[in-house]
Image 1 (cartoon, one colour):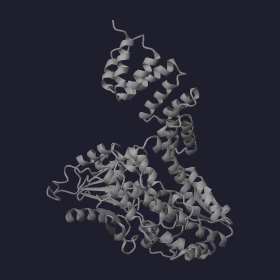
Image 2 (image 1 turned 45 degrees about the horizontal axis):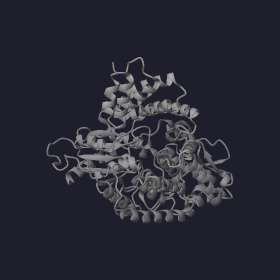
Image 3 (image 1 turned 180 degrees about the vertical axis):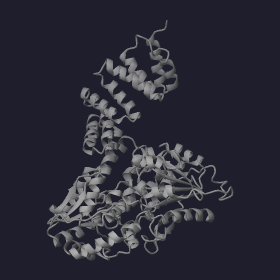
Image 4 (image 1 turned 90 degrees about the vertical axis):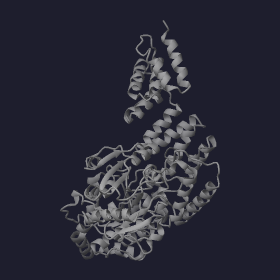
Length: 623
């Protein structure tokens, strides 16, 4: 009789040769033998994981850990399998147990750092990556992950330094690109914005001339977008097109073309246009709240809807999307497989609710998956991508000659773009002044705080001694640290009256909107859903329309309501209006009353649904 040990050695040999299927077949012959050691159980678990049998792999590794709980490698491999199964809390527990036994285990530290980062536990994530690098200085993945974390935290110089070290260890193309595209998130000055963009242009020129640079899967290798460009308050079309052109050149797989495109004849087979809506944010997110009524409201007699979602998050909003009457397709997060899934639906039109906020839909947009492809202002800036045909916007928000700022053909709906239901917590709101203190709220994400807002805040606080400006802590704690550091310089005499509030749930946020005396809109990139909620609470917003649509969304809402009292023409008027709202109670009440009487015009805007249907039908006809 051939021993278990003999088969075990064979299985390990096949595993090392990456023949996982053969290794898996061999271990099945001895899997129940009584002389299997804990080490064999653990290795069988590793082989089963490689073969994709995750539940079985977890069982074998759990048995090994039970027999030898002090083995750090067993715990580490069990954590890997739990991570594959999306059992994140279990994975975290086993990594931490492994590190109690072997505190310097670099791979466990790196992976634990990834879990901490995903949970927005940024400080612990940073400590994990740095400890991994300390124990293994040439650990490429830890350097890359630290660079990614530093970039997301707003430390662009530290990110560039970490990417440089990662590239020195392994010149991976994705890291080379990430280093080139790294930009600050919280700027100290406008000069820093100009300098960072100048650096970006130089880096793009260098990359264009690098004949060896190539990518196979940009989602995995790059894993990010040029998201932060839109917050600089400057023209982005040329840079967006340059970045897009670079990706098309170095990654030929992005130029995928669905098989049905070439034979497509609009309207030949009759029936309604087949329109697909796609996002990675079809859960409790601004994107869903802005689009769900449009998606569910399109008349079936005119539009056949298919919903494509990259989101695995399950909540009340994702259930609303999944349980709609339309076909729902959960997308594989592998770019090639996702393209094929969408292609199989043989769409007429693919509608991206957002492009640029995350890598999956951004890189997907390079391919021609539907004969007509369009995007709207989920991320309100042109994509620069040649295969996106239309940008759907609102005439209320777009400035004159706006079409010159888009690589897409601009289609502006006459009126409000979105059909958003008024949040139930704002119904029957009555505003009550509870104290003599003036509460001014700027509820925007901290990366929207362009340096141009500092003198506006300073001017208001100096004119209203009993006022405080309240802003909300970011998802990343470093954003607040960097912004406070800037305020200490730019608002030195009043920075103590800028308060950073902890993040809050929906009820806490609605109470904040209702208790605010004034809401400040950020220059260059205005509020969207935040402005809708402020108006639902009848709270005045002071806004200064920007040069581009992304700085004019609050203006669009004011125009829809027919109220322009708080729309400033320049910075001085912005400060004056805010100060008057704080000090002149009669003026404040007049504006609040106007908003209260008119804000229904910006909610439940069913007309936009018909206008979208007409756009889809017109696009089919024009094609």
